[in-house]
Image (cartoon, rainbow over all chains, first blue to last red; front, side, top):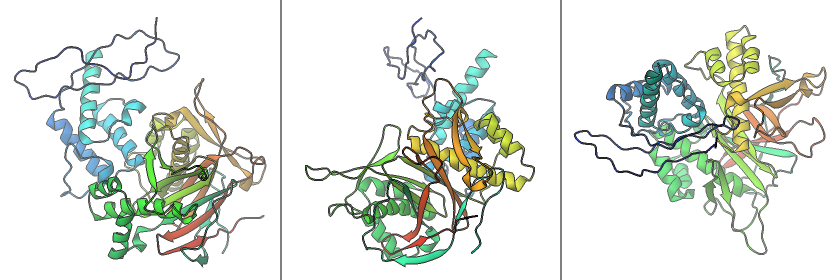
Length: 134
Length: 304
């Protein structure tokens, strides 16, 4: 079996989303850890933007973690860093999200969570994966 | 001043820097750290109130840095981001390495993993010294560590910082089993919180020194182990114990822990190649208001 470290996916066919407002997103497949050979087929995933309730919950968790005043606007594209999160805050946010949603975030993914939207999208992807294998 | 030591679970000497010894002119030439030294500079945002001074700091920044500073939400965060850039620019220029190096002339970039570094203007007759720096900030203190000949990572945290998650739950999720055991053995919750914060700063300083990003060295892939070399607490050392085989984590690093302004824990990590075995890191601490003043802060070492 060949181990293929796949770090990006190329879109080879075009898809048309009819009647939905959703964004087509290329999702990195992630690195394969050394010592765990496996065969991977390359495939792409379509991720739609996360549900508003997910986004809202993430906003609440971020606001609590960073002790933001209630009139601070936390938008989906708000970057944690610009809201004042340091590395410990970000890690705490990830942990709170894991507990809230019953998911587990790999270290390489937690570095990619820099905005509310990214967090919400990753949460929904992981929840979907968890439900699919349940 | 009596020396202050932490004789808590870590048995690691923490040097307390809160005694002003002397003030130097902000502009007299300053020697780069020797290969045995680490310089640690810090600024307290509360001490910088002048709007005209803050404007001077803005003028030091690159357009990209200005964008970043003004993207921060709210005055306090903007000020903190501004001071961080002003600190690093003025600090590196402070060594007056070359006439063409000034706070505004410095060019920075991030390495492949996001670690900031200086791009030097080299020429046939000038090669820059192997100067390394690393920044860390909290809302109430911003610090910059400088070394020559070794990568450096620093992390500062407020001593009073409280966690939103339970400490042991957090440690179980992110730290190694051995570290969780050490923390679990501390019965006093407040002591445990302090030790947790100090441990966090050590791990963060190490990962920042490595410069490969949080995902390059996940916290649960190595243990920070306190080792008593002999019966003297001040001789204890900190060792990095990688937990995976094979590992890309190097272990030739040494640490220092310092307390700044009575309010913050700081950890410094740099390489220890070529040091006589077990010698502790020499740290020179300076408190500064960029462009205005600097005060060297000396600690009182325990010589017992």
